[in-house]
Image (cartoon, rainbow, N blue to C red; front, side, top):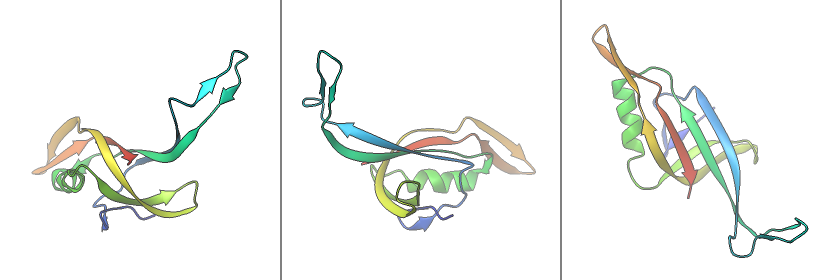
Amino acid sequence: MYMAINGVELPVYPSTFEVSVMDLDDAESTTRTADGTLSRDRIATKRQIELSWPAITWDKLSVLLRSIQNPFFDFTYPDPETGQMETKTFYVGNRKSPLAFERNGVYWWSGLQMTFTEQ
């Protein structure tokens, strides 16, 4: 499997990689009738990807976080719906890095979590 941000392969791959295919409906024209029938106006299908990592070194954490610091970035990943590698533009939400510890002079962070949402 291959994953990259802006064409650069991830320095360490996530232990959890979960792709959600989301339908976006027009809020004005998507309605339900009195009998519950849905009239739907889907305007787009987007991806949301949840990622998490086990313990990783501080230097690799820093590379990951710096690679997504711009408002938008290109992410290459295996897409479950298309059955091929895709590159799409995403933004990232909150980035949690909850636990740091030192082992043999190396600092590690455990539990990094983030969610990428397609633009």
